[in-house]
Image (cartoon, rainbow, N blue to C red; front, side, top):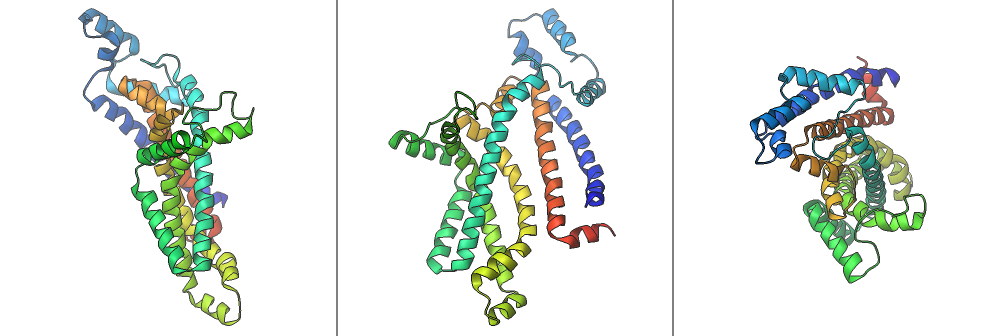
Length: 319
């Protein structure tokens, strides 16, 4: 397993290097100048040039890029142009909230997908399958901002049971019951599309396994349908489902930006929105590269987990 992981690391590092260059180039090809946002409309050419020199924007493109990459290797993420403070501190302040929200949403999505898929295949009733198909379609088709507004309207306005937004005032660990109340609505909103995609794929994978010859033989021997699904079909359906789960993480990260805005959740989504509107290059490029890194690492871990579940993958990769 370790050798399989080591073979995948160089390609992951190559993707991160190419992504860093494209992100750095893309931001500088976008029309506009951060100096205009900092200097204002009535600034003189001398003041603009002074700001440009202070920020290092007068240096050649390659010099700026190499300086940024060198800083990343030294864990020096630079200083924010517009928001203020070091980029590392800004990331630290928002990363915890985003990680808590994303992990909670992922746990909700995986748990619900596993339960609903197993129930649908074990029961295998027409009305249950129709209801599940309708819920899946609704979860995939309903935009995140629409489902978020509906959740706020229903559970915070019509039936005031949960907070409409914000984070626990005393921290996550002071009052776990209060933390759950603040987390529930944004986590469910973020988990809905991931749950719908996972449920649809896992359900079809389980049904495909139930049509295999070994299942027919086992049923003829008197093995119950429940045991067949849980003990035999599920382990065979998991490797491909893990791959879909890794892809769904991208949906989770993209939806977190909107969810944090809807529920006033002070995470990285709110930070990147402020940085983009203010043309804060150091913050935007680090956040974009961080998003790529999270996605690459997730895919790498997904491949490793899939190889662990299905030995044929790592054996084939060794050839």
